[in-house]
Image: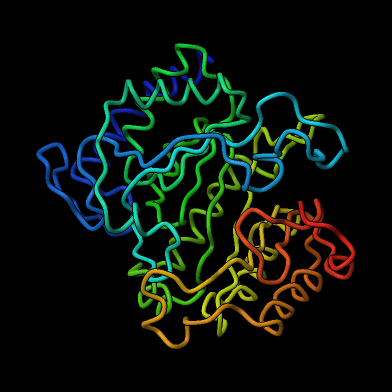
Length: 335
């Protein structure tokens, strides 16, 4: 605990310089947020939080609900449970299909002090959450680190999950080495034209792959305790989009060749057209069985064995199995 506090103290000056003028993500807007200036994401000096609560719909080792089987060893989780999610408002990507658009894109929420954010982290720990899950944290990285420093001094000791769309500045990710326990990034696209068109994320692919490799260097393969709860490591999220817009097969090949075939994957079929997706005919439907099967078959072909796959056209939070074994998926029951 004391070593992490010292680490935070050491990196805060560099992180502050990165945050103001703001270059925390690839947009590198360079606005002076301390003076109230807002860039692409519209965030200013103080963190704005939409909600915080235990969440039971994340990958099983992050949020196993009490009363459901704990993976992979079949034990029951202890009292409380859930992933202690903190949903931040605003976002450094503008996905036209964002399911959280109400607070990521359109509405401003009350800003809070870092001391209050620290108290919310501690409250989630008191409720028995397995971790602190920071959802869309990039643009508030400096304020989050300040809050963590306060919370750790007051006994926060559960894992920190960095749940990101994968459009972070590599310099930010390097600074988080030793502070973040579990990285939960998206690899949303493998072609920059798609990232720009559907998420306003210029130069997404190369930067996304760069931070994925750095995250993996820091934390490695996902590690679980005896109860099957994640303590350290990485899970890569792959959202299947219609018409192969995400290009997941190319992403899978990259992961095998340049990261590790033992990495934990979370393959998601939950896409549904929301927000502005209906304005784009190629995005105005859910995925079909052929698109789903192509991805699942490639996961098996490339030899990935760790992670979770959502059933065909499912809702958020329903994952199949504790190991990826596509041929037997239809015989397994969703969590």
